[in-house]
Image (cartoon, rainbow, N blue to C red; front, side):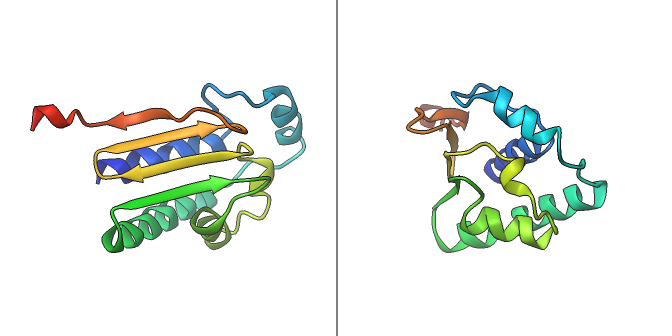
Length: 127
């Protein structure tokens, strides 16, 4: 499912320190990231596999899913981090972030009260 691929890749990019546009003070985040060890390839692969599986399971039951952080990952995102043995995810992920995933659309608001920006959107008029 294209939506899951896009969502998982966005979170992987955040883990690797490649953040997109954000209202968050990136100087603070980059300073924090400078004090933590890089993730291993094994951790990154485990995170990708785990988050993909968890999102697939969730979206089979419902047509909507959200992933979020406050000062650290929550719910499904936290489960994927724990399964991948990433114990310092709150230092790697943007704070106050909400991603919405549904068939045909993925959007994310990065930062407190940030407006959601579409990462992927199928034009429904094309069908």
